[in-house]
Image 1 (spheres, helix red, strand yellow):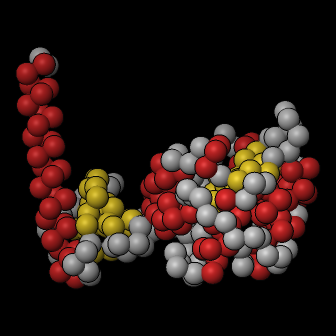
Image 2 (tube, rainbow, N blue to C red):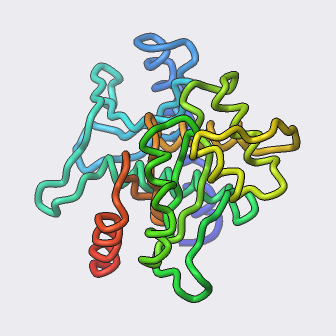
Length: 244
């Protein structure tokens, strides 16, 4: 196939994709919210059913829609033969992209000694969350098992809340790790303002599908909602690693 034909096919494909996005966005706005926006459209193994990524204003959701726009399915699409949750696979892919925006300097890290880290987990946390505090009280035990913990803030009460302000105080402290430990112990961290990523971390949590804290996200995008003890987390991570 020559370059001209390839270029023409690419143009047609992009036009069709753009047309689908516009069509399904219109459908979603009629049945859900005027703010709904379809971000992408993809084929599924089922004839006549498309996968759509829909932004409702609080992060993107994976849904399925008939090609004629008459039927909408919200739920998991499961490949029985291969035993694969296709919906969760898409969400995992989404989370991986979301997490890429936060490098080492944009998280608060509690790592094992040098060369002893076998696994890494990112935790969306809230200063005032009871189970978040329990997790942090055991951070040394996670580290002893070779698990590095990186924190991103997800103040559940929102951007204009006391929990958000506490997160800012911790981030802006001279010693972030010490401030995190003090705050998790219920002590007051002196108020301080600086440029900070708390809002972007919160919005990233929404985009990643976080609806409670703590929420653990592995480097491959897999999410483990809720508190997981050091022993349980180590076992799960070892099992996942053995399957790769």
